[in-house]
Image (cartoon, rainbow, N blue to C red):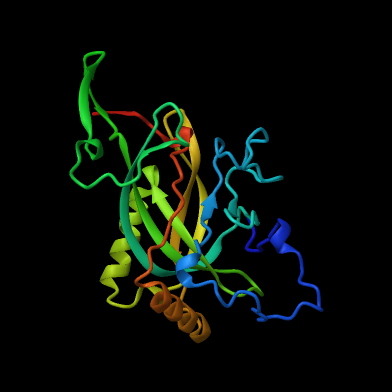
Amino acid sequence: MTDSLIVRGPAALERPSFIKANDTRGTENILTADIRPPALKLAQAMSPEVKRAEPDYIEGLREGELFNSLTQEVYGENAVNLIIVNQLGHRNMEFDPIDRKIVLDGVVPDGDPRTEFTFKEENGQKVRIKPRATKFYDYLILLLLPDREPQLMTLSLKSTQLKKATQLNTLLKLSKLASFAHRFKATPVPERRGNNSWYGWRFDLNGWPTEAEYVEAEACYDRMLYRKIIVEAEAIDETTDDCFIGF
């Protein structure tokens, strides 16, 4: 794996010279409350964007690659740099167990029985059953791509990645600095549990942001602070959804 980043997709095309940079005419009436930041996603084997029969299919996207949910840009399998503008808290969502694309309840409160593990006997062993509701930690980020303006996006960690979210949250809190005072390197990494395999995240501190990056992130924080940010309701990929964990 190299450090180079190859961006694929329609939005990766070079801007024609006759189209002026920073010319935002025609968008004057679009307010912050009217937009939904795209999500930075990590493709899995069962992701609809990888499967040719699905309407969300992105041509050429492979499992283990990062992509933009809105523009369909594919960032590849290499590490990217990002800044966490704001940790948005967590949410619990219940999906249809038959069709994980269907949300049964998008606002399951903490303490609800659906958020708790249950137990049963199986083959003489006590087995723990995962909660019916899935917990997500959500982040508002700036994606930093070479020779590109920072991109405001969301990032969600769930399922097998919850431990990494807790580590990330702990690091941010204990630093006693603004969340956007750190630059992170986010790398897709292969993971396995038993017969199941998938791609997860690795987050490493990667120095301080530049002054321009810090100022941009701070402005995004102020602009979005009291806005309701809608984060895509992505279901668990089947390959990472281990229903039973034996003790």
